[in-house]
Image 1 (cartoon, rainbow over the protein chains, first blue to last red):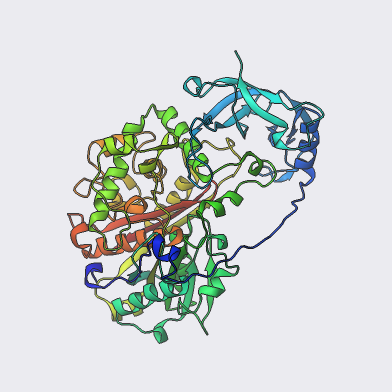
Image 2: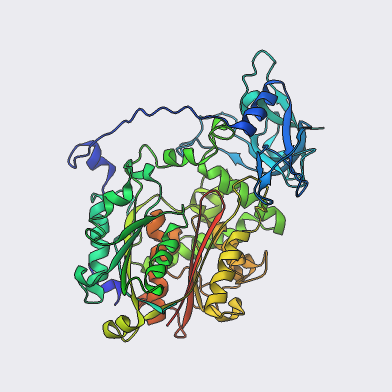
Length: 172
Length: 385
C-alpha cells in the first residue's frame, strides 16, 4: 500500500467558519468543582509552610531525605520514618524564562517573564528538588547551579500552601 | 509467544481543527486500514483503541464513546492510555492479543481530537500537574519542556542552534507526507528567530495541536501469509515508567526510554542498536526531544545526537534516518494518533512503500517510539520485514 494512492479523509476547518456559524458547533461550559485532600505527607508539609519551614521525610531503608515528603518510599517500598526540617535555601537544577500564559498567549507588553525553576533544597538528598519560581532575579544572570533562598509571605499572610513561598531569590 | 505481523494501515489527514467528530475520524482510519489489505470488519477478532486524556474531547469514557468508529461493537474491546506514549503502546496492547493466541486478528486504532477544548487544549494539560504543590504556581505544559531542554543543553554544552536543525529536517520531510499539517521549508535561522515562548523553547521548536486518527491491523503468522506477501513483523516491544518527582530523576537523560528500548531490543535480538536499526521514528513533540530520545534509544552515546544531526546522519539519505515521515513537528501531533503514524511510517519504509519519503537501501529493521506523562513514560516497538 502507498498512502498517496488513498484519498485521505479529514476536513480542516477555518476558525472563521466556526465564528460565522457556517459550520455548527455545540458549546459546553462544565462547572466542575473539586476539593483535593492533601493527604498525610503533603498535609504536614503544608503545615510546615504555614510556619515558614520546609519539612522533608527520611526513608530508613535507603536513607534518602525526601522533599516533598512522602509516607512511603517508592524505591524501598516501605513506610518512611522521621520528619526532617530542611533549609529554605537551595540551588537551581534547571529554569526557564517564560513569556507566555498557559494558553500560549503572550504576556502583556512590559510584564516580567515568569521564571519557573526546579530547586534542589539544601538538607534534602542529592538531587531532590521541587518546582517553584524565581524572583528578584535578572533573567540574564540566572544560571544552573546558582544558590537561592526562599522569600516567604508574612506569618499573617501564610495559608498553608506552596505559594506561602512567594519565590526563591538569588543568594548573593 | 506467536509471531505478530502488521498487514494493513489507515490514517486521516492531521489538521488543526477537523469538521469530523472523533468517531468519524476513527471510522475513516479504521476503514482505510481494512481496505488497504482487503479485509472486512468480520475478519477482525478483537479491537484496541488508544486515545489521550478525556479532557481534550470533554467526553468521559472516551474509549466507549469512540468504540463504534473503531469497529469494536460486539467484539472484545479495550481502550489503553499511557499519556503521550499511547500511540506506540496501542500496538503493543494489540500485540498481546495476537501473540498470546487470544486473537488471530486485532484492529489497533488511535484517535485524538484536541480542538474541542478551547481557547487552547493547553487548558486540559494544566491538570496533569500535582494539584496541591504545583498547580497553584500556574504552570504551563511548555514549562516542563523548557526546564528539561535547558538541563539537557547545560549537561552536554549544547546550544539552541545545535538543536534547531531537528525542526528544519522534520518539517521538510513532512512536505512528502499526505497527512501533514505544517510541512515547511525553513532554516535554522527561522527557528532561532521565531518567537521565544519559554526560553529555551521557540515557537518553531514545538509541534502543533492537531486532530487526526490512525489504525493498523495485526495478524498471526498463519493469517498474515494469506493476506500479504510483505508482512512486517513486530519483533520487539518495550514500555516503562519512571518517577514524576522533579529532579528525583536526571532530566538530561530519559532512563525510562532506555529501559523500554532494552526490553524491546532483547526480545528482537538486537545487540548493537546503533548499527542494526536502519530507520527510526523517535517521538519529536519538541525539537530537542528527538535528540534526547535517540540517546535513550541507544542509537548514539549520551550527548552525541546533535553531532549526528549536524553531520546529516539522520537525514533520509543518512546512515540512520530519523523521522522520515516528518514527525510530530511536521506531520502534526494528535497525541495518540502521532505514535501510530510513526508505526505506520516504519511499516511502509520496511515494505519499500513510503513513496517520496522512502529511505534508500531497502531497510529491514526499524523502530518507533513515543513518550509521555510528566517526563516519565517510554514506549518502543522494533519492527522487521
